Image 1 (cartoon, rainbow, N blue to C red):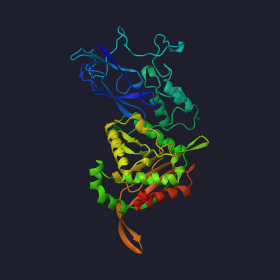
Image 2 (image 1 turned 90 degrees about the vertical axis):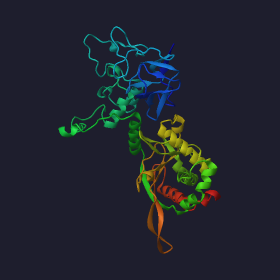
Image 3 (image 1 turned 45 degrees about the vertical axis):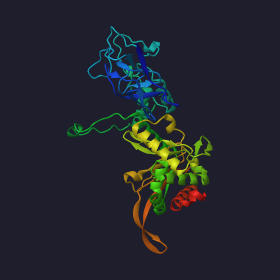
Image 4 (image 1 turned 120 degrees about the vertical axis):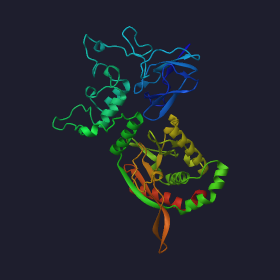
Length: 423
């Protein structure tokens, strides 16, 4: 008995994914629930498990292909030792011949313009763009004829449109005197030492969203510094008791998240977003925590952080961090953030200006704790100091509000008892 392996529901507003990697090849025996293939969407990477035990009979979508929800990925023949279909040596799918058409492969309805005449080239424009690609083309006022298609029969896919946007190509009309400058070719002796790798869907989305944030928001950054002596002393005093009681280590993110939530209550515009000509104020704090992974930066969300204790925040951050590194973040884990915290200090960064995580209006950058001489009560003393950076959308947040917000974060961290007394 055969079972179909299909693309699962990918989450809200996500309609397609790219085949990242097959972990099995036709003929391999697989167990029920064992990971078969990895899918990459523009928000998260997810794994598709086997729907049963048996043998992977065929692969219908190869690595690099773009597939939509419920598209056929392959078939499984139940029962150990079931026969597999013949496959090419590279294991990326069976070779189709004219005598045997591709099975279970959905084909778009042909229109008059799609019917091929003898000798017709399968070139760009042979098929209309995919629905998601067509939507992007319309939204960005692009010329589909100028966008190279990587799909079957030269079809333009969503990833092709994203590439065109990133490269600045595909505009409907440009003066001949201002052509786009192509990448200069490398010297011949250098070319053999270069490697060209296609950007993952996640990396393309990161690049696009960061650039969109710079192009859309009136972004400005304000800076301050915080004396971490009080937080470090409290952490040192209670870390063993804290870990014993809550089964999680006491880190710095719990303190910073609580300090941010405290400041957001006083300065609500930093926790708001612009929608057209309206401002939406969020009376809750869903704090995004930037996490670096081997596939790029992701920002899972600690929901209702303003209602959590430091222990609850640390537990949730730990769960989200593990899920991010293992590629197991769900769509719900990634959506709905109202403010973001980015900790470049874990990599040794002393100072940076973070880019907004649109449509949010604020992001806090943490940095490395470094002992520095500071003036205190007329004396020069050594203190563990950290630079803080708040990038904000000046369209909605005034300079006074931004500075006040950062000062409130500083005050809370330099006097953590304020958390307890709600001051």
